[in-house]
Length: 342
Image (cartoon, rainbow, N blue to C red):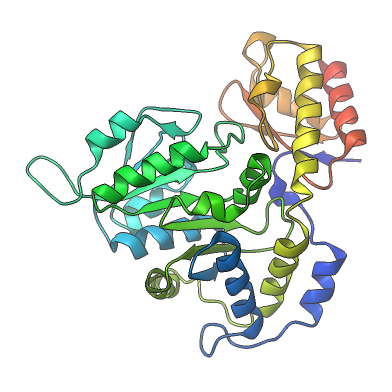
């Protein structure tokens, strides 16, 4: 048996999703609209407290569409240096949006507020470019699933708003953050002008993300979705799975957070240098292999021989991501595999 802990994107749709997909409407969403897609978008808007929403194929497209809809082209994107947009989406930001990222000092995804205040420029001026968008990420992938404090998000939004700069939140795992905070997603999304979230990670839908914002913003975003090739035709079945994800899969994310804690505690018991359970807030466990004498790639290969699949991120970091296909038995198997190949 293989236990896949590389990402929560490996989750399979539930039986309820498959049933909903089989009876979904089949309108042409790119031409006349589709009733099921519209239902998903209305639900997403309601859950995030925004006026409107747009269904897109992926989280990366959600972020790029949002940047374009806020700023058209050009200018700086202010964010932390380890943000997913900066690490994994920079080609789209620079080549397609004509923007460039300016990284600010940050701790666990939270940018330094003084540095942000100094960097914000609401318009072009001598010696500096216009700030196009300020971006935040929660939960923060590279920070091990860290959740941004709401007070910090409020402060970022206030600074940006005072300079006339929009704020976008990359909320690929927005509902993990909401569950960890014990707050509705709208309590997070109130501190930004737009937010995108993924349906196909822990929520287990097969495909898709949603970007949410004002009605005018989403109107612009629809045009950029078309420009980027993101218009889908008979998208009703995919949207139907997304509706099930939002209505029945959010609360159970707490179980993924619990199993991540179990994994982190077990690894720390085997070797205290590997990880700190206190830094595990949601469903991502980052493991530092530096003191083991083996690289992350070597550890990944060794664990694969025992049926455990994990991702190597850099020379000395492994990423384990828990999800609904990983319970206590799977965590115990992963720990046993680590101990066996140590």
